[in-house]
Length: 112
Image (cartoon, rainbow, N blue to C red; front, side, top):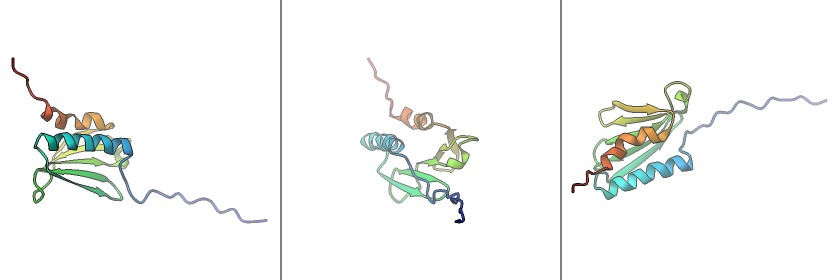
């Protein structure tokens, strides 16, 4: 008869954001633009990580980077919030708590 060839274990060649993840990130970006904090963004979809970088001005380093690294899913969590200096501010398994430090910047104290 015929020879059965096993299906190769193919890993995705590119890491990307799912629709709901990207909607959540872009919603935060839009609110930060409306508040006057950010003016530009960039996305890098690579083999190991997907990165969303938010800039105060186009010619500077990104103020924050939101990284998704699926290889760290079982360990520290696949999501990371990284500052302009490269310091990891928050890491986790879900996107919401990782974005919390940025969302706190939008809150304003209402005086009587």
